[in-house]
Image 1 (cartoon, helix red, strand yellow):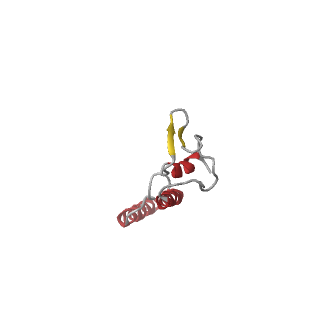
Image 2: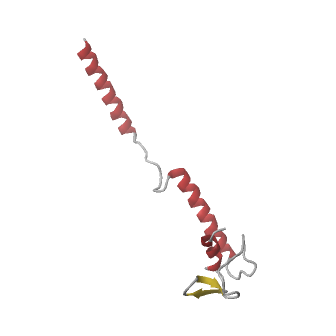
Image 3: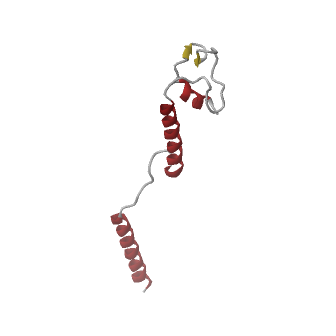
Length: 99
């Protein structure tokens, strides 16, 4: 677990403290968080933490599916019709030139 994930808990914990050298630290240990998955001393809104973690996971999935900048580009029906018309026009031109 990285520091960003741990800070999800720390930012919502009643024990948090700010150290100008280290940033957010635990008020009980005066150290940065070192827990693995959840903090045993956490005192705060656990549902808010779970919601943030779930949103991060959903955003990661969305980014994997749609890329970094949002939904994939869509091509309208009219664009497809124009492309087909252009292809038909080019084929008829080549047919006239060949004969």
